[in-house]
Image (cartoon, rainbow, N blue to C red; front, side, top):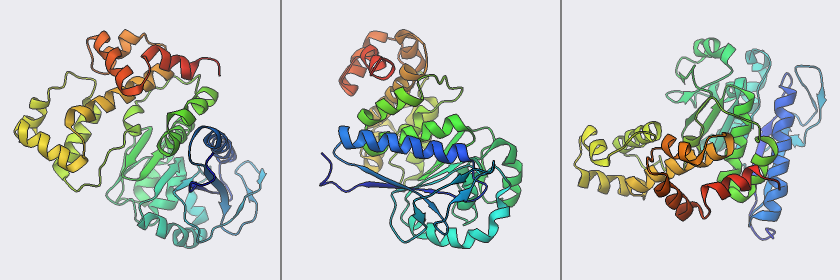
Length: 327
């Protein structure tokens, strides 16, 4: 079905001392995305595990892991850096080669995913200076000392700064790959992945805002601040007139400026955030639909259900069944 459409391309870096479980889980989940994309979407996925020289790598636990090739000049839409179970500066001799491979992708703002200590490779280029990032919790202080220009978020399980995503743990890694499936191929592909690998997860962190296409490259810093505000306060009783006033704008000017920057009205943006949060809770919690409605900022559950069906295409109950029911 997708033979005439360009493929989405994902590269996963493999080096010695990598977390074998993390690396192979990436490969397994990407294979699942690939399999579904060929059947359920009008596009397809190509992915590869790449080592600096194309030779197999030895994981932290001693497992020998084969790869698909060496770092080269092919273009990738996403590059993933799995977790390393060592202090990664031990691998510093590889940094120049990996940095040269990364440079054109970073210059084009390709999506970058750093799992735990894997974000070391990106931080070492200086690309993260002035950006938020997180890493494996035991190494936060060490990374902050090595890379003081990075805005390390010690308490975050997942961080996002523009095109760079970081995690501090394994469950979050699976979440980010699910997010990748949604961004590249939509809900139809992501639904099967979620049902297969995330069905038993009950998160202790809020993942929904990371799924939002933020339209953050518009250059209006004040509107960026409003977007962050909405993404962190969406569960509250938000009045857009109050939001405008708090950010020094009239409601009319706020609406015009927000729409000019993002291409979307403020209310529609807020609704997208709330409905994404609701979708996440429907799949990854046992809460009732009424409870979920309250959690995402709607006191009227009937209105919430109507809005959900209008925007998503199915009722909240049907959506939960699609993800959590039998295939």
